[in-house]
Image: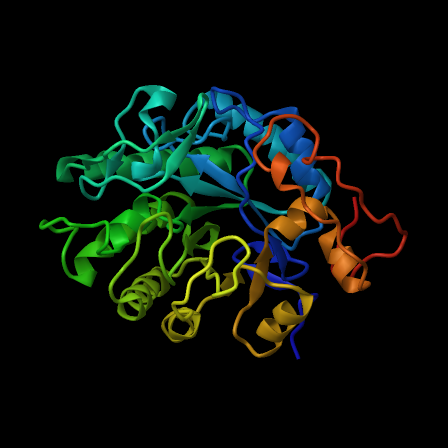
Length: 368
């Protein structure tokens, strides 16, 4: 029976366990979206993860809308991310870069750029900005003639990620960001080749992933989706049809893995009463499937043992427990996370969570 502590191969990368670190926005870069030495410490502390998926990382100025989040469009970004990846690799870890375009969730106050989306819509709620939370602005529809430029931005960021030493890239197609805004009919009101029926709304996802595969290889390309229910105001009228169709497209492209974020009705960071789509996606996608959202050790073990998932990504548990695989292997208590420090700057609540020190290793874990 497969367990969380068994290895799994993702293309050329051998993951020593199936306890993976989910992408977590933490806001410890600079205002120019440059990674810092503190980020190198943070990620290397968590190198015992089977695989680290980096925080969401902007592919362009247009797509970057989170204060102090990292970027991957310039040479300075590459040089400083290389410090992070080298620290992770020295500690025995593996790390993919998550590629992020926030679409209508970019606030114009950050860079003076009007947000773009599938259609002229406005996200609900307020954006995080350097001047506190502010209402979102209406996005302009991305012109069909702009699609090649957008795809080029993704490709440039992916090549930069590999140049910076990342082991692969993950397209952020989840959580109500740009790709998700194109996928779902609640936010996509287009009447051209990228709107209307499912095959049109999946088109941008397919074209971006195909370009990433061409640029860095299918074995180094992954995708994240969030198929069940509303996410930051983005929803679909028929999730059970849309997302298996998207998964089938990704399966045909042979990507390294597909990660799904699916909160339940009692979710502790987002919730929905819509049923999970993962079982339907499992039939459509034959590659490694990774599940996320509110998993504890027992539930994760069951998902792996039953074949519902091939790995599980943990977010806040990894945030507060750099040595999470070791703690799971030895049934040790977990540190609680401190939400007040999630998006703050500085070391507190970032690199200050205590680790359990021991000469013994968890199965498949490298202890730095």
